[in-house]
Length: 211
Ligand code: 5GP
Image (tube, rainbow, N blue to C red; front, top):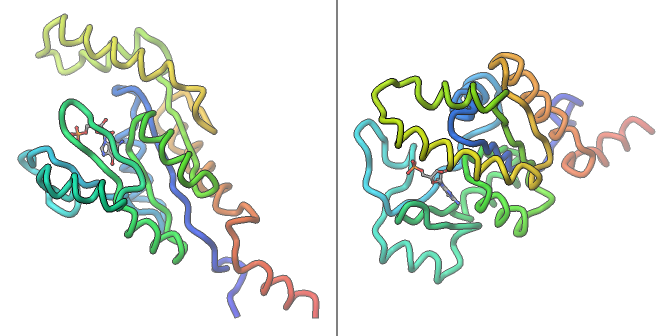
């Protein structure tokens, strides 16, 4: 019989969104490194591979014709066009993984989040990270030092647009300290894993407690 620490449960889709510069990449990396049982959802994209990227790990790279076929055949949980390229979440890997109790981390914007939520509400947990202040965000977005004022202003405008969608999320965490923020995000994941409805092994477990 399963012990209480390893009760069978249904996996969840953990969405982390934020304006760029609010620390999402760092938090995502720490979650993947330090929390067992969660893996990245690997998207399909039509954009060309960048140096350093690994096919099948960063993205599944494909061409427009194959992407269109996948859309046509309903193979995506959600998809979007971002900066002229197409990106989508393939259904098959997620469906099988959730059943086996694996959790998936999603790095998608608010539009993808909305679509995923509409499709799979009960499996979705939406977390939004906010920067502590606009001044701090600007500092983080310009800290590379090589970008022109226009480029930084463009990034700030996009960041403000992303921030305006904060109310479409279940949890909002202000990232003023990366370690504190990580602890909070990890706590959200661990609490969500214990939701009764996800713990598919509870009925059997409790039955054995009551004999
Ligand atoms: P990049 O090309 O820089 O890797 O990603 C560009 C944007 O596409 C990012 O904002 C990222 O969040 C978004 N993106 C990546 N994969 C997906 C996906 O499967 N669905 C949606 N909706 N957006 C995605």
